[in-house]
Length: 423
Image (cartoon, rainbow, N blue to C red):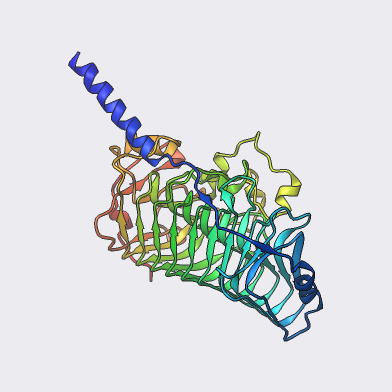
């Protein structure tokens, strides 16, 4: 009888702890009082010439269609502040984006908010020398799969600065940089998104002094197959990444739908990543994971295929035939994890995903601070020059070598082989 009581007590405790990391979807409900200036503002965008400054007044403005700029040089769009100039696309009938910028050089947008676009709030494509400053991207109401995919979404862009921005409610990534180079992402906030901040297939990226919290996953540094360029050389430092335990609300079949809630950082299939001097804490699945693309490909749901219209919006599906991309390297390498602070308020891992159960049984019920899947290409060996993972001084932390390629046969906490530094 005593044994049964103990088992029931432990089970009840686990259920209570599980409930503590289950969170209802949050809401963002600012007060709005719209003024009709659509025709005037739309005309200013259409008629803008090189070297123009479009100054937007204080107020809440509602639009039925996207605002776009194409092929211009030295354009500045500026509002009176992210709490004062609000561009809302709630119920828009034309276009997918809120603000769409293409093929521009020396472009700046600053001091305003963009809300409730049907697709992405701010998309910038094939441009260079771009500054995005003090922009709030948000979807109002409760977070939902129906929200647009990307909040701040520069892609195929060179020489890019994103600073002082906020991203709220994106069903894919709040602040996203894709297939871009020479990028700085600093002093931003991202919350209530599936992914807070994501660097995808981008090179020479610096991510620092950001606050990333209450997303499904905090920071994603990804390399995906079948794209035009592949990323490397990413530095992330002085960021605060905490309490990213929001239930995943992305489109099923998308790559981010495989991000388990309670994930602080994922470094996936990217080379030359320097992650240092960050604070990462309070995640119910893992604080930081280093994985190959195979982890995501193995979880592909054949019944959750993305139709072409969704993929045309830039939402990436899981590619089960990634090996047909002969230029793609599916494995992480030359990763440095050094001088970070890891902590966790949770006593047990979440039971909402298979990783939590794995850690329950394999990791003595501990949530890992640093987890490495250990998957390598055929013929490679652990810690060879191309696949080296170096962990420096990170204080007290829990390390896990998952040995995922062998069904966790040699699952281990032995960190000694990874105590090194990259030259």
